[in-house]
Image 1: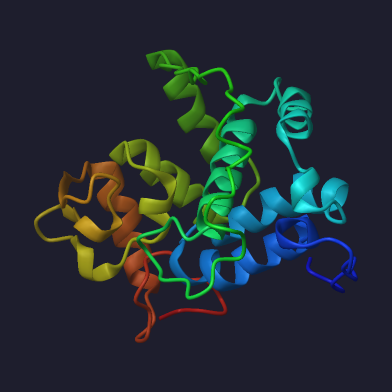
Image 2: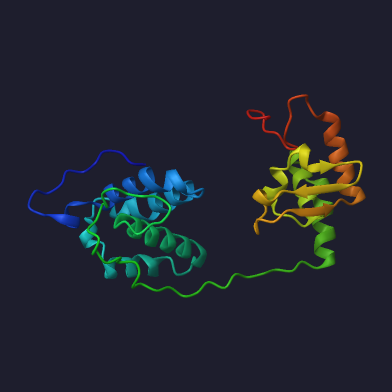
Length: 232
């Protein structure tokens, strides 16, 4: 992703000497990878949309017009556009020392450098919410039992449906969170979106899945859905 650093022109000073590739590398290494859980997503976004097209462009040339053109090319992908804008906005703020999460001794850009992303607005993304009908839910559950996929995948997807949970909440479920005797699953605050613990009452079908998987549980297994390489 990072590769070789391009040479800098001696005749330019200040932010004009820094390329977008160098700025991205500084942001990822010294900030995103240190304080952000979403650093891998930042890396994906910046690699795909910035480094490949603008990596050798000097920061001073990455201006309003360039950004507006970039954003226009992603207008039909509003979610991707929103995430990219947020990542760029944060990167330029951090570059001038505007961050409370980490102290940067020497900002990468002058403190009075104007964030070029701030002035480029995008349309607010209104997510489409689909509320499946009872018929669709029954069809989904039926197909999960019929299609040829790994059993742990099918179990995880079925538990997601039966508990109305997020898929990551299910796949990261630990046996310590599950009480098979009382038919409960306590989702801890640190794993819930609103940072509050959730008590989930398990249906007979959900208990059947968990009980079957518990019968396969190894002595060292911590997770209900352990990966072959990481069972703890």
